[in-house]
Image (cartoon, rainbow, N blue to C red; front, top):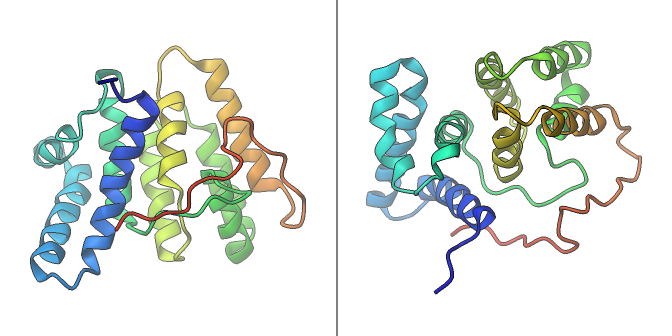
Length: 199
């Protein structure tokens, strides 16, 4: 039996997170209550080391690669701040695209927030991400957590500066691109991505 690829492991993890969202709306009261409990524990992980430790059981049960443990914990907490169904692939599928949707609603304030976000180094980025996700949640703007996990693995790595710069440039391109401009096909994106949601 072949080992699942790194990409498959990441998608299984984000599917677990999206499953928590679907649990919230389940007609099964036990599943709904369990999803609320887990999301509350994940949300509280930003409050301090003790609260973060309470979230370990849910994230480590998903078997994160050792090099990505901190990123998976961060993404789990971010998802808990703004749980939602899986976003269908679109021409603006990174956090830059989500911020472009905010720009349409908030104007210059969104531009300032985006500039602050992409200027952060790896130490300051998690704090600004929490603020950004809360802001997007307050405006009911979707986030693609599949893509966010992939991007943060690069942005928070200590030795991938050139790759991190390319991620920031993609975010900026999607943020500043006019809404009517055609998007070039990203070679790393499947031509016909699956739109199936976790049930």
